[in-house]
Structure formats: structure tokens, C-alpha cells
Length: 117
Image (cartoon, rainbow, N blue to C red; front, side, top):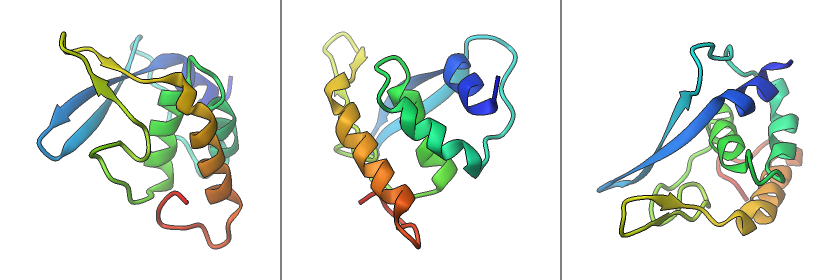
């Protein structure tokens, strides 16, 4: 299994809202963390944005791997999060298509922009 798939299968994203915005925390469901991802993983992570189960993790990993500048409030790099009254964070999976398009545009642009288009 390549590292991108392994990361998508193992990592779980939890969110914390702080005064400056949203902060994603990546944790593994098991003790075996995948090795560092490389730029070669970007195409597979972009494809994973279409998967309802993995799109949030893929977006967080892409943001970290690409080192694009991003905002953390009111959205986190274009991802809209809702903090429910019970403290649970919900993310509408309907955002997948728009995120995937933005990352695809970023990937094919040369030189790559410092922020998502």
C-alpha cells in the first residue's frame, strides 16, 4: 500500500476551534503512522477529494504537503465547518467537488500558486 492510501486509511481528523480559527489535528487510529508524504502523493490525494469518507483528511494532508497559505476562519482553506451546540463538528460532503476542482487547478498551474485558486 502506498503512503497516500495508508495515510487516508489510518489518519483521523479532529477539529478544534480557537480564537484565530479552526485547527485540524491528525491522529492515527492505530500506532503505525505512515511515513512522510512526498509531492508524488498529491495526485492521489486530489483524487481522494471525491471520496466522502476521505475528502477531509485528503484536504488537510494536501494543505500541509503543498504548504499553501490559507485562512482558518471563517473556513479552513475553503472547507466550511459547523460547530454544533453539542460541540460536535460537522462538514457537509457536498463541498467535495469544489475542493477537488480548486486543488486540480492549483496542481496544473505552473508555477503553482501560493494559495488555492
